Image (cartoon, rainbow, N blue to C red; front, side, top):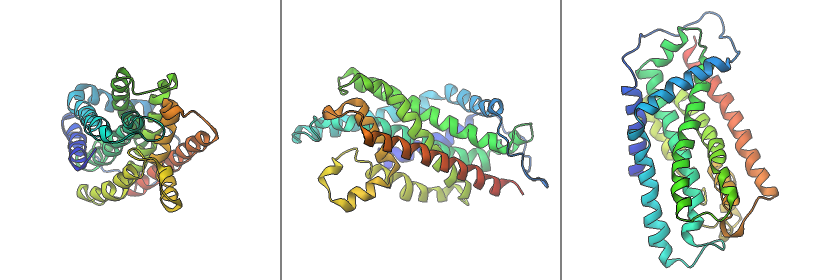
Length: 293
């Protein structure tokens, strides 16, 4: 989960958009009347289904690099660095970082797919234009993108969680809830990423989203250290990181160091839900502002 992995994730997201299908007709999204604000679940599902089919065609490009990267991180940090660390938070170092790596893999996958991938489909490939030339509304397209980002992040994280579980890195059967936690976090990250794509003037400027969005959330997630060891200022900064809430919820589910669900788990869950809903609104609103004129 480093600069190299971020480049690979961005490349795979763009590649998926490039080779997904043949060039589509370029239809200008220009409406004199306001867009129909109603969202059709059936049409949203159709957009998700299209992206899912692309993923199933290209899964070896899109899934394997992310899984290998996280497993190498576990080998280097969990086992390599872990040999020099007595333990963190009442657990071995590998067990401590495992839930965080699972959640952050979902966030990384969704964050890159719904920024670089979405931008390419919107601006370069003009897939959005072709879709809204049909009965599909722009809101359906945006929500379908969010569903796909959450789906892709959850698939990636679930494979990694299964590998970690096979090596006994989780201490509770509640770890079976990790895919649901990852879906929630990945949806939230997808909505933030589409918001970033909707205001980015060009593909290259999405680097700001990576440098000032994804990476700060990742390093403030508490994946590699115990937040309780730091002062109030750092802990306050972590509370503002959506990734931290996902990681802490995953640790509670995994039973890391004897942890379990408590009242704070409800706070973490509420933050992810509220932020996901707010970011969904911003993604739809800003995408309307960009494409409907």
